[in-house]
Amino acid sequence: MDCPMCSDKRKRGGLITTGAKISYNCFNCGYTTGWEPNPTLGKKYKDLATILGADQQDIHKVTIELLKYAEELETETETDYVYNLQKFTTEQIPDTASAVDDLEDGHAVKEYAKQRGLLGLYPLLYFDDRLYKQRLVVPFTYNNEVVGWTGRHISPPDKQTPKYLHKMQPGYVFNIDRFADSKREIVIVTEGVFDAILVDGIAIQGNSVGPEQAHLIEKLGKRIIVCPDRDKAGIELMLQAAELGWEVSFPPWHVDCKDAADAVNMYGRLATISSIIKHATNNKLKIIFKFDYFVCTSSLFVHNLKLLTLFTDEKITLFVKNNFLSKKNY
Image 1 (cartoon, rainbow, N blue to C red):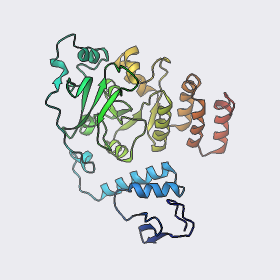
Image 2: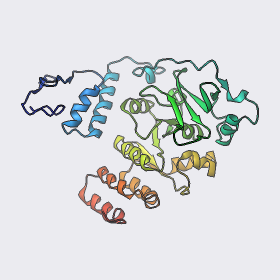
Image 3: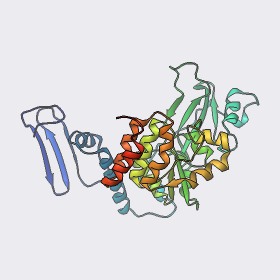
Image 4: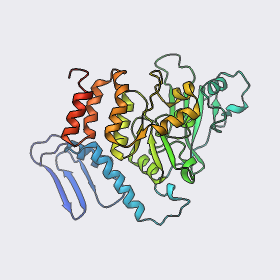
């Protein structure tokens, strides 16, 4: 076959299947990859599959299924089942860091934490005037060990200053320790760390949930409700959650509420959590119905076209297109 990686047209690429094993090698550029029964798909293999036309959602699903398969081969106990596949390197909080609670009243970082409603909700808040000046540092824990952190600038002076500085390992889910042995039946998934703290949930720290993250979350064995941010990135997460079969919540908050943290600031913590649970659904048609108001008020119509990928029935797709996507000309 012609190699899709180097565009060679002399058919020097070879794809071989032997039982469950798949191998690829190009005798022109030397690109080599493959897969044999194991719990992961390598990056090179994923890249090749993508170029050959594999859908990203399908690759994502296969990755999750492989993780589930690997888990079935292991002997687990009820207390350590969350930690059997993910391994994170332990990190140390910088010696120069101080607990925010120990800072003097009026300190800029402490006042920021108070203004965001974080004091008293999350016990591990730090400030480091040497390495993370003017930043509120939130450690990441896993299996009761610190494995990283994020530093949020309290007032970025310019666009060149990053709002966040992360030290995060791939596959990590913020605050998942809290739910590992909890009897709570519901877990709320948010994008950001502050959102998770304020609604007592977990955060994937981005607009896309990775396969390892998805597996960790599903292994909790709880009702999963995703509360995406109300922006372009949030649309991507909503689509992904729907594909995973998770519930998505889009409460009728004020248009100024761009995420769960804003809702807590406007409505209070209890009311926000209650509204997230009340408006959660895994019905794909209901998801687009509830999402419609946001799309109509956010000038993100073009991304609404992606919502059609949630539906396989042509009649439903046509109904959605005529009633929801016809509000702008495409």
